Each structure stands twice: as C-alpha cells, then as structure tokens.
Image 1 (cartoon, rainbow, N blue to C red):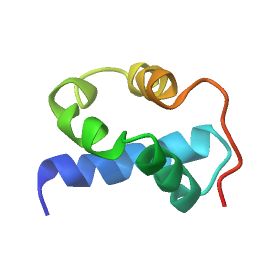
Image 2 (cartoon, rainbow, N blue to C red; image 1 turned 45 degrees about the horizontal axis):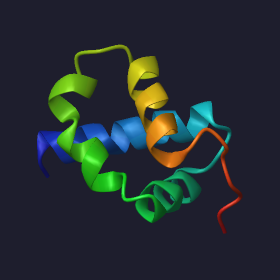
Image 3 (cartoon, rainbow, N blue to C red; image 1 turned 30 degrees about the vertical axis):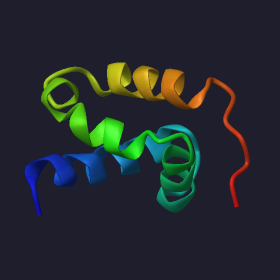
Length: 70
C-alpha cells in the first residue's frame, strides 16, 4: 500500500470523525463528488499542513452542506 493511500485512509477517518460521520459515509460522499483521487493526489500538501486545512479544502470540493448519504 502506498504512503499516499495510507495517508488518505488516515485523512478519511479523521475527516469523517470531524463531521460526525462514519468513514464509509464520508468515502461515498467524497467518491460522489470525485474527490477521492483528488485527495490522494494532494498528499504532498496535505501531509505537511494542519489537517484543518485539508478538511477546509475537502469541504470546498464537496460543498459546505453535508448531505445525508446512504
């Protein structure tokens, strides 16, 4: 498993917890907004910055309003 993907899993779990969601719901929302590959490709920036910056970036990518995804 690549370091980028390992970090994505970490980011996904932290982002989900921050949003009060499970990781599978958050993953589906990111996938529905074509943000999974985007987040993985942002590894070089995201892993050196504060996670809140990555969260804010993902919020912009998927929209500020979190939808109920089932």
